[in-house]
Length: 521
Image (cartoon, rainbow, N blue to C red; front, side, top):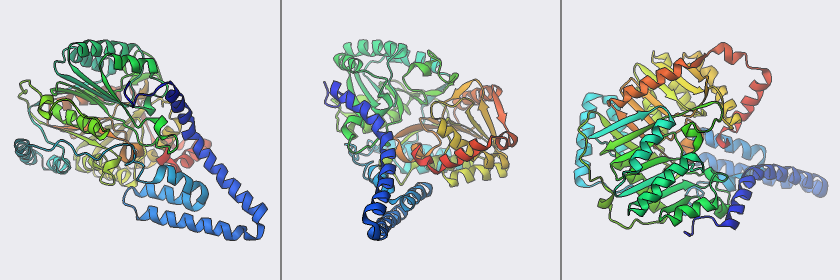
């Protein structure tokens, strides 16, 4: 068994650790109360002096937080906690607030595979063509290219508006894999879907195809058994567990997760979107009403962008591949197609230079006619909220498509509500997906450019998680997304400012309180 696969005793530690993450918050508050009581009852005349020292320490840490680069809202939340509850604040900051945590998960800082000279020249040529065709989208592509993300041509794309169709396509291509398969998913859950996928992976591995899997440990605490992990390994499949919870019981680094959704076959086909490998995403079980999701298949040159992302993460986790880089490049003929494709990724090791958040901001500010966004969660910086309001004020048709039925993150849904009033007052249209939970993550701008990937519009995506996505410029797939968004809106209820104002008083109060802790939800 690979050293990173949890054994039975480690599995117990993982389950204990899940409760520990929640319990730590309660314990720090208890520590704050206990410290105050101790100072009051036992030190008496020295209590004020000692507590002043604690407050001063809280102020010093708060100043340190203020001076760090990064999210203003993130810093403000920590500063308020440190100043109001110095004992709790400093304890939690040591556990969750420092940037060292993100860099201490046994990950090595490894750049994406360097560009060959031919690739660099081709990407520069593609960028020049896109700039001539659409200067605004050319600026966005140039921003990402400067951060190492190639702009590809010779790429086709197929959009999927539901998980069932997505998985039928994925499984069909997995069964025809000739060289290798990469899978990187936040959730890889036992069930009917996994049984089908594993059957194909086992057969392909037996046929000599290299199969590699990365999954996030926290996303699968109760959904993947030791027996299943052992069966995967016994089939000759290489597995890596991202940020194993049992390893960090004492350091509680649960905030930093691998939230990506990537599948690659032979370097020629790649899939991404909001869809995880679990039955609810395929409509095989019902959770929170109808589970509406989306994904895309990339075929051709652009698929290598996702292969490179997987290889980078595999190497960051200390693993190597048995063959040279060229072995993992596509051996298929590239499709001759229109438009441009630009896969990209992000994660805590990139902060404070955050490509995904900046990409969203540039999409919002560059849209001239329309901007449609689907997201299951919404908790953003003031700069992004203001950008949406400005776009709507400027006459852009801005629409936000959100779940009608929240998932188990009820508090997060209430936090999202606190943003809606301002958006509605500026003319943003909000659609609540009536049949159930809208988990799709996409942006459509001017019916010219689309973004799809693993990215939510919240602090976790923009500050804490490892994420992935793809920008598709002037490709036919853009119209496929438009058609699906029309279907979503036809099944949705238009949420109005009257609806927002008519929320009950307790919901308004608690939503506002929860927003104070939005960065931790």
